[in-house]
Image: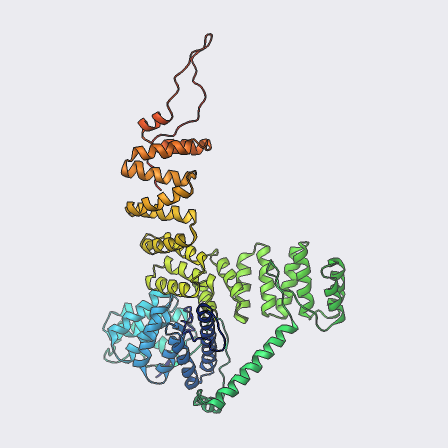
Length: 604
């Protein structure tokens, strides 16, 4: 018998174009500007080729898809998504060894390599290299415990390798519980029943279930694609030569027409986004609707009255409910009413704008889980990077959304591989996962795309600084940031790192530079005193710096903190204690003075 199983896609590693600069020969321009234009053009072409490849892939036109993915890889060899799709196509075309190479590259580049480990496991299963196959299926499960198809294969391998029945049953039952609609569940149930009966003798020289791993079904995560093509259409399109000039020209025309149609559609319902992120609806058919639009800003009450009349006439017009939601939301008059109106508009027309607006209203009503769900649905219809980042940040505050927000981030970066905030978020997550290879790749991408952006340098350093394992990289980035900006905070952080790493020479040089620029800054003086007193015991310099700072009449708290760093003898010399005075007709009393903190060790 043959068992078909489902594998899950797509891949989501962020992709960015590696610059392949072509000088602009048509006009005189600076080398830097020419390089930037080349980077942008390469990124645009990479996205275009990847999109065309996906369109062919999900229509099962693998021959055409393969050529587009290879073009994307030519531009950017680190394009994990293109490598993953290429591997799938080659595996389907009966070239497992070539597919294996691409899956290995994709697994190395991606932050979530579970699908690639799974595919590698399948290839080794086909090659009957069972120990290798088992190793990669286990790695796939470790990377993504929800990829239960790996349990199916592990069960078959466990049986064939002569393991005990319980181990085999554990894997197969885990798969059956998660996939009750498995295509060949009768064969699976029969195999489990035989294993559960200790009296049944099984022939372990044969596979428990006959399976054809190459009979694959593709489903792109969170995006429905119509793959029901006729055999004639698929056959005609399969071998269409992408490189043929006339074919490519016709396809470009079709793409242009499609883009123009999309632009016209978006123009018809022009969306303007305010600071609250709410998307407005523009004028269209319907006199009452357009009247309400006129009064939306200058007289919201009248606009609502007109909308009520219009809704009575046609309660199925989603635009009416959408505009009502917008007016109520922006006027802050009726959050519950806005929520109800937005929900109705979304029910009637679940498009990007209505879903996004529903999420904004839900978030304002502190229904964060509902808002997140609405944003994800909106992004399934149209990937907008800014909304995607907003949804990711919101999802990070909700329990159990780590994997989903990771996939959302990867989808967004697949479309916008140069997205600064997305790449920084990816780097932070890679640091949390201790993915050193991923961190290095993302850092190189950020520095290539944003070489002149000092904020990117600082934020990368701050991400790395929170983990002792990446301190060395943090020091290098902070030094570059400080050298370019002279930022006091960065200099103090860098000097603190030097002290922590016992690099007193670099710390002294940097602190001397900071003190020359900021001799009255409490943090600078405090860090220098820590170095002199706690490390070098350079009391003469410590006394001179402390006296100079105290002469500036700092706040009492800062004065006490500085004195508290000094040894008792030095502190008493700088700020001698006042002896008690006895009044004629009263008990002894001590004049009021600021308290001095004990001389306890202080870390930078």
